[in-house]
Image 1 (tube, rainbow, N blue to C red):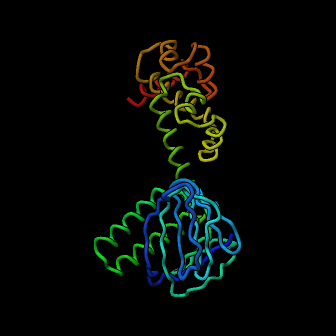
Image 2: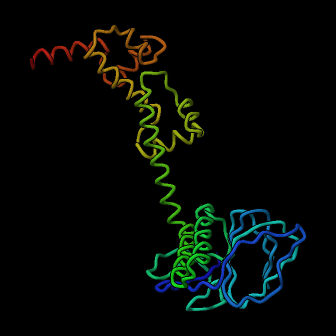
Amino acid sequence: MIGYTFNVEKPLTLTMTGKFVSPSPEWMHMNRVLMDYELFIQTNGQLYIADDEERHVLQEGEFLLMAPRTRQFGYQGSDCSFYWLHFTAEEQSAAPILIERYEAQTGRMMIPRKGALQRSDKIIVMMKQLQDSVRSYQDPTLNNFLATSILYELYKQCDPGTNAVKKELKQLQLYNDIVDYIKWHRFEPLKVSRIADHFGYNAKYLSHLFSTISGVSLKHFIMQQKIEAASFLLTDTNQSISEIAMQLGYCDSHHFMKSFKQMTNLTPTGFRNASANRLLYYN
């Protein structure tokens, strides 16, 4: 991955910023040599812009970073809109580097030359805040910090490590939601396909995710929860085996008894009798 590194122990220096909307589908970017860095955040349409090495097609939700002394020019009509941000760095260099892997370094950040944003909405909000600050306060120190925070947010969105942590947290949240859903609905007929439909995921993916995190299959966990509920009903109510089976969503008492013995090594009646004896003994 080709990109640039920046020292951010001190904030970068904002030159200017804004939002551009092409006046017509025939509009093309001007031909010029950059004196500073320019960041493009594409919000709509396609931007056809080139440098001496490559012709870029910037799509909605993507970004492009061009370095000082780059000759930039449009090569095709662009009906589009984008945010732009010009800034300078203390170590002003036009030479890109090969980013083989992201390594956390205090006071430094690495930004690819081009890529897709993970959260374009977040970057856009920050760009709007920067523009409001430029118009309202005209405070260079504040604006420099805001511009640096935008670039640092971009850096974090491009960091595979950050994205991996986000993915892991998202999967863990989904797992916890599934557990809560099963516990809440364990007195109903429950199938893996129903749970998958409820959460909007493929049944095989959901089963794999659940077993990876919990160590037991999703189908087995559903059965565990039903047998746990059955154990309570057997010891704390006078309902018949057939009534309990029906209440837990089993199609018949035979299927329920088979599942119960599979999980506890006891029949429902044997479990109820054993529990009654223990309660009598301790009473």
